[in-house]
Image 1 (cartoon, rainbow, N blue to C red):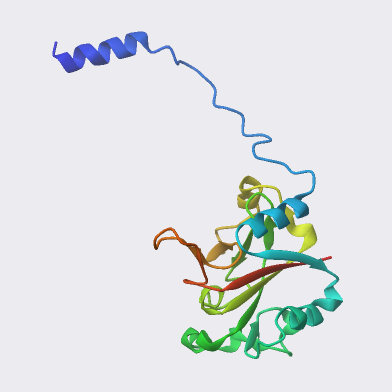
Image 2 (image 1 turned 60 degrees about the vertical axis):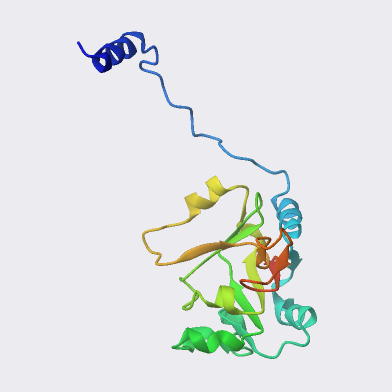
Length: 194
């Protein structure tokens, strides 16, 4: 009997972890008493901000937040007549002059201040990263507590692209100095509609 066979025999003989059940998956993940409040705290910690408004004041709120931006693009049905509809653009390279992108978010995650966006309502994924500023619009009722709940909401069979976005672009790769907007938007808001 070789050394390897002796070692394997001893392992098999002393293997005490037999018929042991896996940990339960039920109720796994952090739950928050007020997911909206937690989301606001989390997104502020990563350089973004969140507000909650009535749906009918969306356009006025956007103009107050970004009064000087002229080249504004949106994929929201209710704003298509007021701003550039990026889904009509064939070449995403032509979006490089967008000052403000207003993007529909499918749901928000309180645990990390992230919003799920996908190609269901947005033709060009470049819009999330090429615009100078970004506003993600989500219904307030669509906040989940944690990433476990988030993954349960995503149907990966129908998607070709999706991403979690949280606040503006951030990097501290160079001399550990935090730089906002190096690889994407310089500012980011999440507007919740109630």
